[in-house]
Image 1 (cartoon, one colour):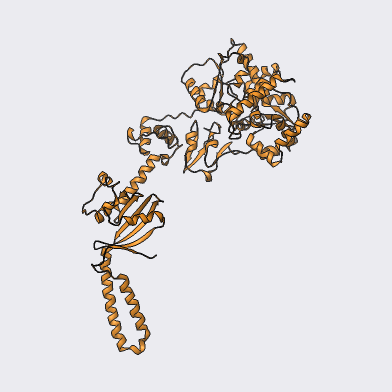
Image 2 (cartoon, rainbow, N blue to C red):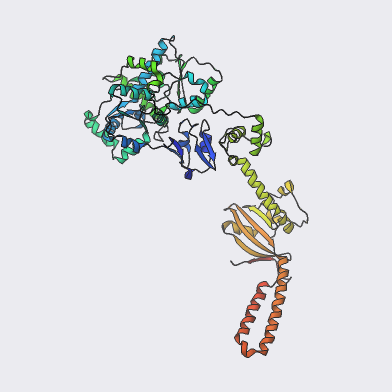
Length: 603
């Protein structure tokens, strides 16, 4: 089965943005591609949201769900309460649409939330009114605790998540043979479906639901208009509508729907949302900071209304307002609301997670493990040197690799999660070093100038040709040439100006101070930097004079032969003379009286 979050390798662009954004650094960079590591992933979906090339994908379960609906089972939809903030057409239109998609009935996941609330209150009643649990409402929080803070596992709530409780309750009411499909804003719910099969059977995001509605040509706006004309079209929720627990998807909504919610100071419970705040809270607890309050932890900032499976672009304020108004309408409108089930709650508290575990279905819960790396200082120092950090001054902690510090990067490298090439400063230094070596050792003159005709870089060969020096300048001294006007060295500096508007390489033959130079202009950065190569071809010119002399001898010899056997050679002799004279012209060195200047070399 495909992992709920995966990487499309052909679309990954080596930007490391997912590494920077992942709160637990569950991204492995290998051969330049950033891959989600299943055993480390907490399924928050942040990498999916921030990937600029959309290489991070959410597993699409739509085809499997559509097939599931044809299985002959009665399939119930567990609809997340955040639907009220997601679909502006209204929940009624959505429920009607779900019925037309083929669901036997629709029930609110908030029914499961109400059962969780009742369980917490019963437990608190037997413990002096307190319940020092970490809520399991957010599966990403559960994954984070089990994978990165295993010492806190005993602090997790003893009852499963609202979705798992809801699935179990629907099976109690309607039989074990039914199917349950969750629809909501959360990717991590797919993990609950994978690890606790049947609780639920499948999980779809709101984004997948929108795709499904388009495939079936179901228009929510049109359905809303039909419902306005005939409210009886709306199928009822089963077993009934949920009440205040529909406020779960916003930060503090769970606590507000508990009996503790009447306390404006919330002295027995604390609500925290957002990756940074949640990880910080768990980290503090793992270090021994005692907590006696109930913790409502939601990994998405602001709550589930901002989950990764939601539509992008709507403000948190608008979504929170919609969710609050939806809950208010529930507790003020007439009609039956879910009143709880003390018998089922007793079963929940007695059996806990064993209620949703099925023998033979594989792993029901993620294994408790820790990814806290343990390496010796010597190992870390060696890794830092491999990354080009030979002393503290070179540890810039720039974050370009995605890690908060060079030390974190070194540890990730030791863990096999990172590659040395991820270090931006290391690669820049290596590239600059290679360029420097090339410039310093190349036998031809090289100069690069900016659009102000100031030297950006050059080599010794250039200075020897135009700087009237016969010794080598190395290191920092050569760097002092940078920034000087080009006209200090060459009288034909204006020729460079013409090259900024021509991105193609141009070649010329230059006569300069009794030297013949082959000049190649090239663009480094369009409209910004131009480079030139100067190759001294004076010495080769001497060899060409020898060729010319030999050619003249051949011509003379040919003419003598022509005179002797003119009748036989005829016009061939004339052609030979023309060809050899062309050779002489091509290699002819101008006299010393010729002025300096450029001659265009035809390609």
